[in-house]
Image (cartoon, rainbow, N blue to C red; front, side):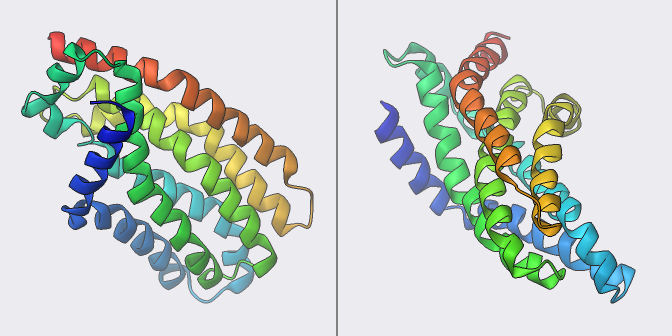
Length: 221
């Protein structure tokens, strides 16, 4: 099975499990919605806190969706079949992560502007929010998939996954929040977005190899 067939197969399987797709979106929405209720209608404060709040909630939502990314394939023997396939394992895992991001990460990007307006973020900041999430969430998914590959054989690997991956999420978090803060203050955001684009290119290029190596280690054990 090559890249395109596996990508299409993963999309069909994900569409059959709408609850798995909805969980990260519900988590993202609930976290962002509860903050104004807890802190009160202090619009100025919420506007200043919105960049960090949106990005932290998005980061945690992506992390929540990744724990079981390879679990079903590991349990039914599909990972072993991938390794025996004539196709590159790195390309196969890239297809799986791409399908996962298209169904969950992209939906999160689409939902974010509505929640941002609820937090009082000005409309002129929405392009920066969309672009930063569009560039940053694939990096979060790919980095998280590395941790998911290393912990796929563990029954309760969620905590270990978070400990492994959260330090690698920090540059994306800083750049994403920085882009929104710059937009909020009327400053140029191109620098932050270009750095996020560089991270996205590096992640797409290098992390499939790391994911493939992690799966090989987990399956060999």
